[in-house]
Length: 190
Ligand SMILES: Cc1cc2nc3c(=O)[nH]c(=O)nc-3n(C[C@H](O)[C@H](O)[C@H](O)COP(=O)(O)O)c2cc1C
Image 1: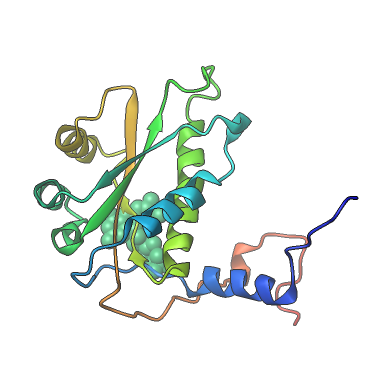
Image 2: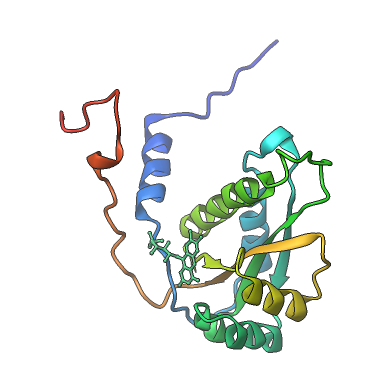
């Protein structure tokens, strides 16, 4: 007998949309450590992202070591919040995965960005705060991350995501802007 399980419902649709619209970058965290079960959930969400040809070129470095977090904070100009975060996840692209041709060479950036957004949304859903801090394509920042985490040359750090329990609750920005819609839809009609 075939049993079809329908997981979609008005409630879960509403919850997913609320999660998307409720997420905002969090840059202040409490001192409470993030438990491993939550880190696993974050990584599962990240790895559920779409990727070109399903290559899944992502690699994740989990950083809990205080000295490494402080080194990253010192070396990355816009990631000083790492100095008081208990955890960071560094999302990297493995450029060797999937034998990309010349046209496919940059797909890791899109793939790892999709994984990052999944991770940020999962963090929000789990009651955690996080922020994408940019590393790629800045040579200096990539050097700092590579040196700190001993990342090999074929692996490129895209970003560093400090994560923790929020110690601030900023209002999510309303970014809805009909002017961003070029054609085919009357965004002004309700
Ligand atoms: C590619 C990228 C790089 C970013 N780099 C930084 C960064 O280095 N430091 C930082 O504090 N925020 C960084 N952010 C977060 C943005 O500032 C933030 O997403 C934006 O202001 C919108 O705010 P929101 O995330 O709360 O919606 C980055 C975001 C992206 C997508």
